[in-house]
Image (cartoon, rainbow, N blue to C red; front, side):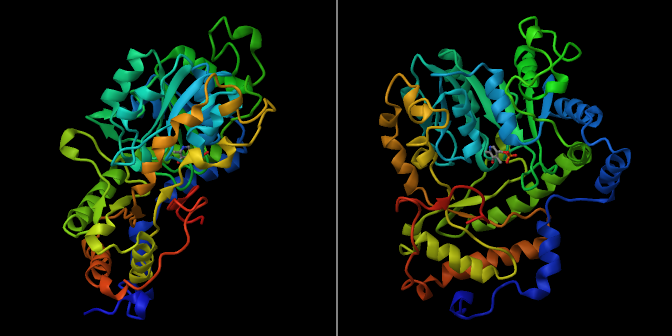
Length: 449
Ligand SMILES: *Cc1c(COP(=O)(O)O)cnc(C)c1O
């Protein structure tokens, strides 16, 4: 019997493994080429220009397989611009899953729109079967988040959207370059927006990107936050012409060209680096799949879909297969067992419909949250069935970027140790729970809580 690290035993990874762990988990991968590109911007002192950004936009659009791309200073602004792009406004309803990072949907409230929350399925992914009950004459759009790299089931989602005349915004912040049935994510909806910030799968410092094939959406996205490109050189629309030369959203969304320069270099190697991650993670998960209690989140690649760069990987957790071992105790024990290898956290993002922002915060003095004050119905009544989301336990997995077989085998060993020696843990109590005592997880980030 192995004495678990949490009981004072030796962890699987110790300080001597530090270099090797760092090498396999380092992200983004920065080389001399990124440094040279950044240095060039510094030397030309053209941080606020758009020449490099425009090159990056053209390359990104070509890579993504869309006609247009507009860069923004971050993903949150890119999502806001996409919402302006489709013409979201006061009283419109927008449907999004409740299990996502806040920026997928909170920007909608800037436009006075109503957030309506949808349930997730077994894969913590938008459940198409939950969509139709949420649609009303006020519904304008669906925000589809390819959450934690898992491609949403786009066929039924697009069929429902088209049937009801709804716009679709894809939030690709976790899944840049991923595929659904052989087709690139971010090309299914009317427009897609994503974060390219430093911790994301596609990491270019602080940046966001909007991609679309629709020229009208493209021009509105440009006019929203780019005062210096809201002009006749970039925008042909007669509707927008009287409003040239200011940013129509009253925000400045320009990219610091240090990030655009880095983005160009990252793009060159992104697909090949993601392929390496998929090789490593699939090898890792093939072994974890044989253990009880865990089911890593991934997609069957033989369908032509994939998990892009396996951003923030997780596994579903089934305590009933492990004598009822509470998820928090399991996660803590795995963290200790991995030692220098990293940490394991329970849960994912808290459910957004539970955040006070949607309950009481009156952002633009419209008499309450826009979700309630500007709505034609009490959308809180739709939230009831979302509670079963909380029953879906999960734990974070180590995000491994390099196919280092021996190292991955040792990660498997850490999980196996805890699972096989769980009797040492059964008397440990689960810690406190989330904001209203029912949730596992955090509002954002695995490291930030
Ligand atoms: C990170 C993230 C965003 C926002 O991007 P930022 O670059 O941080 O502003 C939006 N949606 C999702 C799903 C995200 O994870």
